[in-house]
Amino acid sequence: MARPLFQALPGTRDILAPDSQRMRALVEVFAEEAERAGFGQIVPPMFEDLGVFTRIGESTDIVTKELYDFEDNGGRRIALRPEFTASVCRAYVQSRPVPPWKSWYAGPAFRQERAQKGRYRQFDQVGAEAIGSHDPDLDTELIALAVRFYQRLGLTDVTLLVNTLGDKADRPGYLDALRAYFGQHLDALSEQSRTTLEINPLRVLDSKRPGDAEIIAAAPVLLDYISDEAAAAYRRVIDGLTALSIQFVEAPRLVRGLDYYTRTTFEFASNALEAAQNAVGGGGRYDGLVADLGGPDDPGVGFALGVDRTLLACDAENVFGAVETAADLFVVATTEGTEALALTQQLRSEGWRVERAYDGRSMKAQMKAANKSGAPVALIIGDTEAADGTVSVRPMAGGDQVVVSRSDLIQQLKDMLP
Ligand code: AMP
Image 1 (spheres, rainbow, N blue to C red):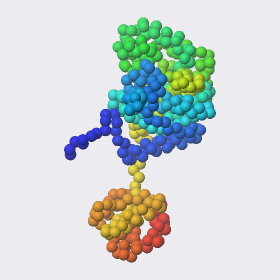
Image 2 (image 1 turned 90 degrees about the vertical axis):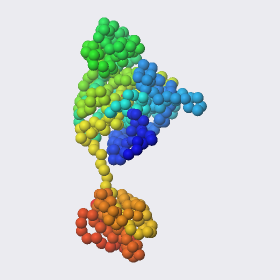
Image 3 (image 1 turned 180 degrees about the vertical axis):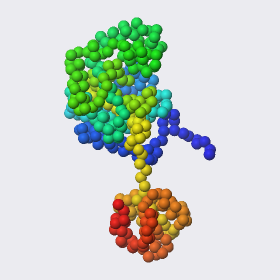
Image 4 (image 1 turned 120 degrees about the vertical axis):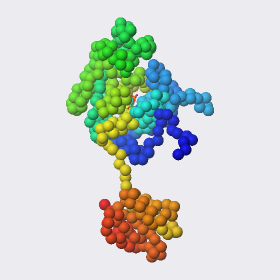
């Protein structure tokens, strides 16, 4: 076969049926859970003013290396969204809905990453954000929403990691402690981490490089540096999760890939996936982001779950499989007329899933296609049926073929089909 002229770009892929149906079904499960919890859907644009996303954090890879940004014809600096939270906050500042404003979303995000399995340049997320309340019960409710979603998919091997990053005011003291600690272990740190240390010591904790792990494991923890208020909020979340019997692991050195997080942070890791790409979702509080985007000093909390990776986790756990849906009816016609077209249209209007053969194929070839379609019933129109205004109804699993008048057909099929 000749090589195709074009292929989907690295890190992008076509999602074909039945995988696309499965993806839609996943989003529907999420939508149902989110709406039960009082979240309304937001559909923000896929691209925004570059500034919306640079607010995510100047020292994160997502902003410095991975943004797809360009100048449009009007000379505006634009970026494709690498995530949704900043857009949701921008929308909050723009529309000023009554807080707490709870919204959920689903759609693609774009990051120029090194493509590999489970890491794409266009990937899908579902997520939820609640803006305008400090109440830590909202943090717990959001985590519980994600947990219910995973449960409904049938996933059982997902670990919830929880931490607090304290408030912005708690940060300088902790950063000093980190600088001092990592400073003592500079020789053992990877070169990248030494560079990161100069820009943002917190992000060294996020290093996945093997050599760094040992040093990070003994680094100071933020919990020892946070205000009483932030500590109480954290305790409230821990107590809430415990009250809801949600299993979690406290991960005192968990930081996330974005700079805007404060207080509660959490991540979901699938133990069924390879460690490098096992994060299926994550989130937390971002109490300064709305203000950074020019809005009031309103807090926010939310999460985003990776759809592609969640589906990979489903594959690995053998749950939430793709379902190939068979046709209900298959129309076979050997006439020259428009009978097949008209009958198919009528049956589809009745709500059945109807397939047919094309290209004037022989009766034998059409019956073969009918068999392959999985439809339990074939409807045959030959010259006799066309002349008499009838249809031959053939149960594919065996049994007698009957000739039915067009006016009795719908009732006959209703009796036959489940
Ligand atoms: P983040 O905001 O980076 O934590 O992303 C939230 C979730 O989106 C992650 O836990 C992943 O499941 C998913 N995700 C992030 N980046 C990618 C990517 N490049 N390809 C596939 N999924 C991703």
